[in-house]
Length: 108
Image (cartoon, rainbow, N blue to C red; front, side):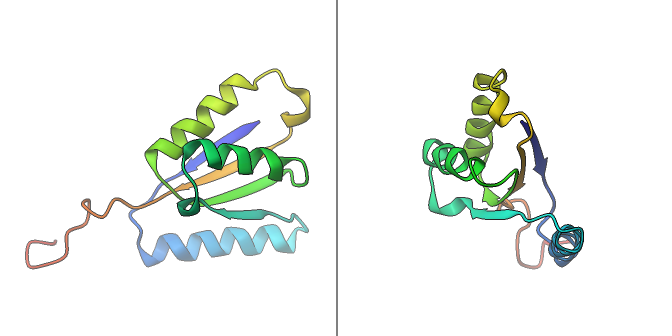
């Protein structure tokens, strides 16, 4: 299993790049399952990914919290020797921290 954590500042450029990569994968014939992380806690997200992994080899998880990312990385470590997950690729897109970019006159 390969896990990639994707971070950014939540800008429009990040959204554009994500759509571009998704479009390129579609063009190459790679189907990717999209999971919206905000619907799950850490343990539940891992359960959903385990179920999805039975049908897809590449997963895109949008809006991940730090806790969810840690849960997936722990799952990766715990299943390191499982051959059936060997070719699985999971892209975790970290949710932007709302405190990182304040809105108002102090914003630069």
